[in-house]
Image 1 (cartoon, rainbow, N blue to C red):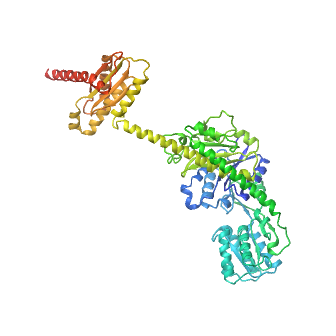
Image 2: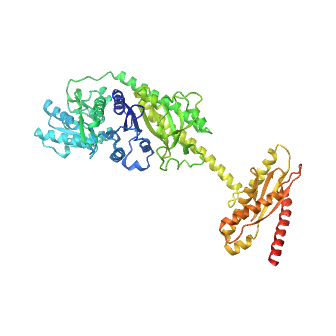
Image 3: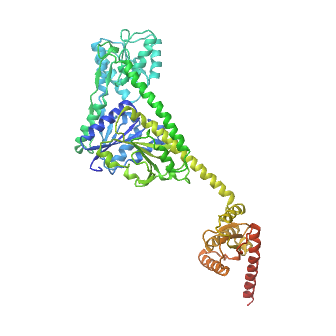
Length: 631
């Protein structure tokens, strides 16, 4: 529960499909009346069992916050993936949240199903008992599919109860697919064993079967009767109109809401509820049922949707192209501020806008449920909107308003190159066919726009890294000579006044001894230590370079006191050696030169001026060491 509303979460696939979105629309109306809000977690395509591990659409289920959910509804019948539904059930049960499964029966869940078995039996009885047909053929769905098997078993049982012997050659498998059903019907006609009726496991196959019969000059229903199942919209304009079994989305939604009202008494129990379907007789079986609707009106509506889709696809592609030319996330958000993107917000992972993160890797690691995200775009914000950080547990901006006004929240994962980027939340003020169709269209455009923007930013980052590699010494991290000369020239050009510079040259003492005695790895360690000493002792803003094996140079703006710098070096190495744990001491000879007010030196000049001072310092240190050992 949140903001005084219980929350029903629906896990679903292909919300753009008619029967699916009709259920969501009807369910949202129904749950508002009983104090629930509706969160819908959608994948734009059906995720197959073999594709689960790498399919980034699955990330939409990872944003479900079980702490605020009161019930999870898994629409397995449209998801068609038992492994996904089992995992969703497991997650919900681990949080003590009841689950309603729409589809196959599961233990410990509330099971909600259309009464497919009995109603398909009703179709078979109608053909045998009312039309007195005995030579029947079943165009089944996918072999082994639970819903296809329901209809096959009903077909067999009704034949037997009416004294008709069931034979395997009375069944073809159209896989719920119109193209495959056409091919199977062609085979049946060529076999010469034409039945009196073909009973199809769904309407799309029934329409395909009628088309094949018509092409062969076989009349429906005079020569062969045909029936379907599902009651899809298209059967209203077929000629003849298809006899079918209607699975009404509104009936399913009403039954779901009825279960929610009495949910408290069902938690932890295995309950099964059947939603009756309706036999709708029409001309294709020989009945005088409802006549075909006005085809022109249906086609006008279909073409209107098609033209809208094409126009919006063009506009969205232009928005995507502009996003790809952006240099900042704020610019991306500005390009998304277009009238075509309404009633939605876009929330992405923070590393998706970090140019240092490889786009192929962002979003792959496990993240905490209370992690920070980024609101990249919010259609309900004002014109001066800029992206801002946002807690994942907050779900979506303006959540209290959305729930108070009965908006269904539809979540869909964003991804690019198979990597999750975040999610889009749609909160349409009107749940209509056009808006549902717009969901996959919009998500696809944003996937390309945001993913492409990320790739371009990362490419620029890699180019800068490559450039840096050419200018930087790999051991010390200081500039190499090429990089130093470039930056030194910039320093001279950007100085407000032509004042003095302090040149600091540091040379590692006894490098040969360290290499010969302890190995070159330790020699590299000592060189790096001197480079760090140079950086730490010199003031911020200084430039540094390693120009020889153990020689490093720093350039500082302004006149610094040489003796003070030398004392800092001595103190730094004293503390460093006390903590290093090495068998040798790291020390360096330092030469410091302060230029005159108007003196400008090139690289060779810097070395020449400081090298003599450094050499004198090295000689002095050697004499001191020799004198100390002589005593």
